[in-house]
Image (cartoon, rainbow, N blue to C red; front, side):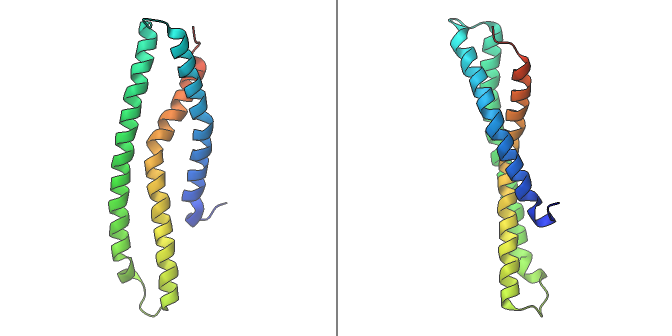
Length: 134
């Protein structure tokens, strides 16, 4: 079982793997649909293409907002971290603690930024797997 320190990295690895599987499935389905849509596309195809466009913009906005909030949170924790350490510890202990803190902050930022893309891509892969291309 991963320790508390490694859970964020494990979660990021799992999400990256799920994205690596889901994204090609969604792209393949949508490219096939676009190739078969013809001119003009059916209302069903137009809804899917519009949904694709809106989803991408929404995921980007959510990721930027989440990354900004995580950056603020990390800045506050990073700024106040040295004052929360015990005074008797050695300088090397402080340096190791600070490096660990910044590593966790970086993992948290990646996790927050990737979450909207992961959520949508995996949901789309599940949904489009059930849809038959006509």
